Amino acid sequence: AGIQMMELFVEFGTMLDMEPEDAMVQKQVGKLQGYITEHFYTCTNEILSGLGKMYNGGGSMTENIDKAGGEGTAEFVAKAIEVYCK
Image (cartoon, rainbow, N blue to C red; front, side, top):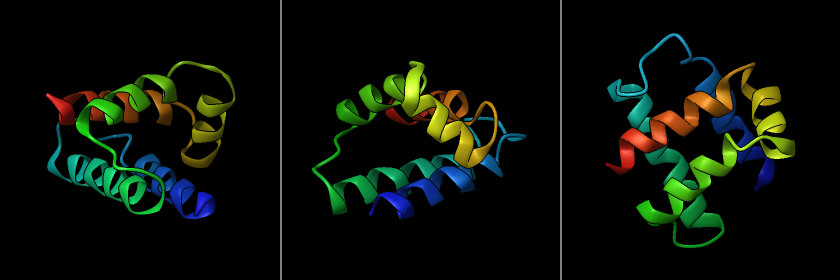
């Protein structure tokens, strides 16, 4: 399940030139939330918001996301999640 989840971040990496508010980016956030709910636990918007902060919080999680999607992907995903959860 972990490998497939990283593929979602690879897809986010292809969207870095878009705005976090873009409909395609927001749809991808929805896919991420659905994936987490399906494979791990019910991912509410509150939980998703917390994950977004963790993704961009530095350390190995941020490094792994940036490695999957390219430099800046973790920050981009965190911003997109913030928009999604409002």
